[in-house]
Length: 416
Image 1 (cartoon, rainbow, N blue to C red):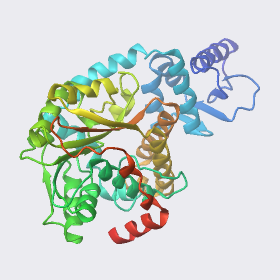
Image 2: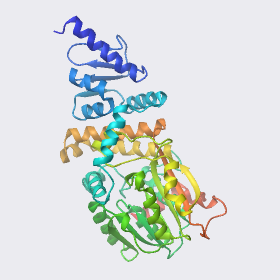
Image 3: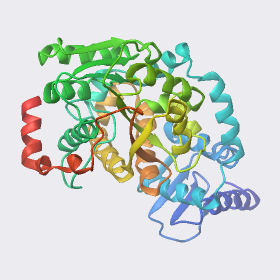
Image 4: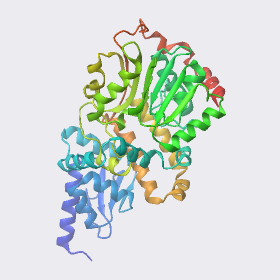
């Protein structure tokens, strides 16, 4: 039995943790001895901590300790995990400070996860080459692992991903027989859509071996191998001249120290007469990325502020034509992913283990919470060279009336 003194100390420490998240409707408990804070409330969320070692780690390094302890089962969350993370993130935003230990961890990770040519291969392999069969369990049928676009919040994930690809293509004003280069093609859905629905020729670069094999197979199945070349190579090796450049969900893996180099590659590809679009997770201010996400899920990742991304465009006199923030769309996208992930959690556990399931659940719940509270943003930036002659007069072409669910259903059917 714990002594009264130990119980008092444990309660004091639990109170310190509770105070650090803004005293929200959450109760913290230490398993085995009855210590809890707040006392005698019926909290909708309870966080049960396995032992004093974990409790001490939470006080010293809360983000990494919580992520690791939840993943390996030393912390149990009874209630809505996403809501708990929202409470924590709102408290951090109100405090306006990044914990010093998080900054220190990010500095260390910047060194060991640097996005050099070799480093990028290691980082991408750890996340995207887990297994296509794993991602098939919870993504849409086209395996699109980026923010969807919901013309109406009630549309399906399939329809929203179709609408996203249309949104990107319309912004770029693609025309038949134009050439497009893509940096980071995922499993190939956008390249396939551009080629089949807009008649362009696409050259897509990606360093994920699993994704390239999947994309090439889909191109063969759809009879598009003569219009699309999927290149297993680093974006830094893009060569040739093109009418348009597109990158969806890849800038997060470039790193701000490489943005001007990234701009050099874009300028080399489209010169002063082309146009392009980058779609990426960002932040309102230049702040460190989650060290736990970088350690366990996305090595080498960084979400930039808009002014940092201008380092891609300004040195080459690119004109920024349109900036759109799709933050609520990404929250809704990940809600769909989480729902499908939970339905497949037994299969995921059989592929990996229960710790992997908990870590990825935390990642998905944390992503939803981050987009809901505004800790993360989703930017689309449309730009063009100084001599580009195909800049639309208005934005009307982005929002034509064929975005109806019936039209989207036809698109889905035609591409399936």
